[in-house]
Image 1 (cartoon, rainbow, N blue to C red):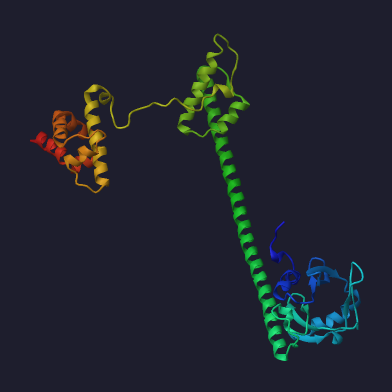
Image 2 (image 1 turned 45 degrees about the vertical axis):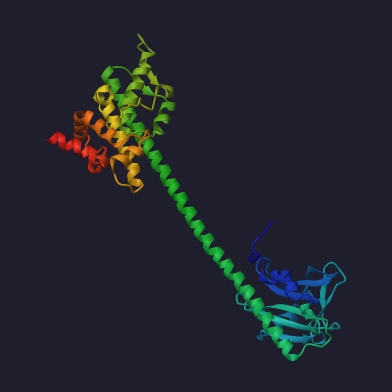
Length: 378
């Protein structure tokens, strides 16, 4: 499973990076304090069969020696193998470091400050004595002092840059994780408050309906009650509260109709309650008289001209009879529009007075209609 690089200690991640930076390197050893395991850990990566293999090191024999290296302040130092007081023995699945073993190649030690534990973590680079570490040459010329200074400077800064980036990414993720947790907490709180408000509202609806049923019981001198299912349905009612009394009274009437000539108490069940009242449909903006033939054709004419006028306006054309006629579903001529308006003159004037907010475009800007209005005023 993929994971963030900063989940692991940055020195552990170096074992996957350094072989790409230094393809000719013999091996790399890192030593660091592990906060999770509360111990100093060592890791070795060594080239075998053209591939680098990594494994944990047993540091028990040299912890005291390593501590001296961890306490020193120099950011990096060069050592010969002979000057290092340890070497790696690969003779068992758990290799160990032995002090004063024979050493051969040059070794670069870079110290990485661990401010939390007030010690340095250690990175040992076992390099060849020539530039072949970098995979660009097979020259046998040894590395000069200047070469070593440049290599140490670059590797030291590379490691610190990598660690800083890793720490920055970790802090950034922690910031966003904290922000996400705050958002989740706020959402959960809001969800709880909304649920509580909903429940309180539902309880209020139940009380209201119980009062309606109680009043109806007194009015009709008969015992009415609401079942558990009915109360739950009322609690989840989402309609207009002003309709609730009508809904309950209709439910009572319906339930009562099922107990004709019986004097027993009536319990209002869930299925007695119809929470959606029949909708009274009306044609918006058109009175009953307009639904008859008396005004229907005049309304249709005005609607058709208004829609055509809007098309003309959207296309930034002049609002003339010709342009409006062309924009009609079935194109008509300008004279035909004027004739139609003239024939409906009386009804159109009444409609425009009855509905001052309708047909606004042609009322204000369409000259053939304005002419009809002017003639009517004259």
